[in-house]
Length: 301
Image (cartoon, rainbow, N blue to C red; front, side, top):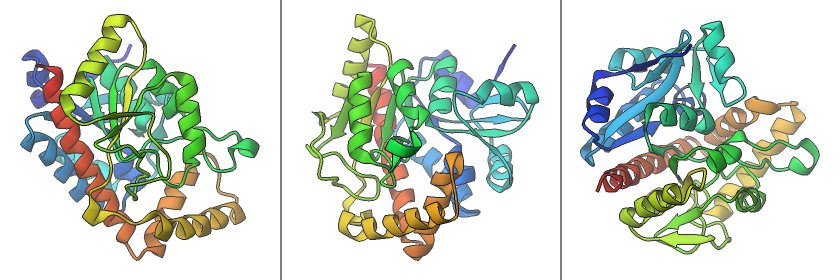
């Protein structure tokens, strides 16, 4: 059977019913290069702590579920090559094989729920890939939001995706999609997407109470909180879209597919923006971590 290796910091927070924010690890191994990934991971954890909550970065290391990583483990993971990218389908197999893997949104939600953590901050969720009408490439993140009761704070779906189709699938699955502080759905690097958000909330307490109400009513799943990137870190949609199109064409020409698509696209967009996309990515993750800590604190009130 599985066991959870929980750091002393997270154990203390769980034992005393203190606010905790889960953090994914795929962004460390597949979303950013060394050493920016390690620096980002530390800054995000510090952001959670400075806003009154305990961070719990989640990963699988040599077949052990890690709820929280100490500095040594975090640094080693940030430099490890060939790490598995785990979602619902392959999480158990990684444990049985005693391999190391980092958790996507879906896998982080699953493990956070097992540990009793109700709030999770990430960069952007996965969704319906462009051209999905031919490839049927749809992230397991969407189904996970519909069935696992964890609030996910993101800057919307990743802009490399088909955001209108992603929104339609979330609606079909009954997932509340809540824009924070604005009427329009944000689009990861951009504050706007041209799409009206289905729902809007303006303070963390509202979001926490809505999830408590879902639980009381017996409704499965969590909520997606779409938190717009800070204005000073934004890349306007009109500027980033041609770059995304170029990266997509290159990925198709090279036959990139399945789980390799998102890391390839993020790397090419990083190169094509001369690193600006990475700076924006770090800014939005920090912003999401702050809001997640505020929601986690409100969950305990």
